[in-house]
Length: 132
Image (tube, rainbow, N blue to C red; front, side, top):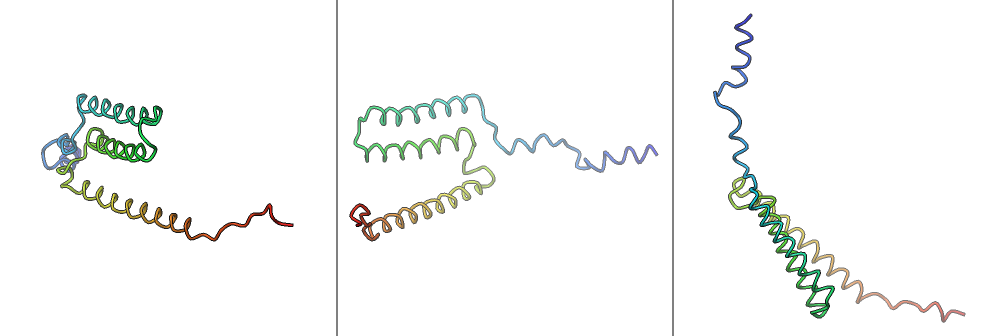
């Protein structure tokens, strides 16, 4: 019976090494990368907040600037906190991200295009105060 008890652990770990190396394939963040990400996130949030509160730029320029800072902040989060790069998972995570971005751009631009044309092509509304 002792041979059966000894055989069971050997069968489950027949390759002869530990599983600790499996976690090494996924890069873990260091305190430095988290600190850099935090500082950049605070800066990329504070500047647009200041632009809106101070009114330093015209409204359209402020909106475009905020969108730029938002894109930069997304990149900071993906690199510093999610540890995405071209090497992780053989580049498949980056390909999935690009595919998602393409779908989001298509959905957003299509929605904005439809809403713009609905707004410009709507029939004029009736003035209900003129009713007898």
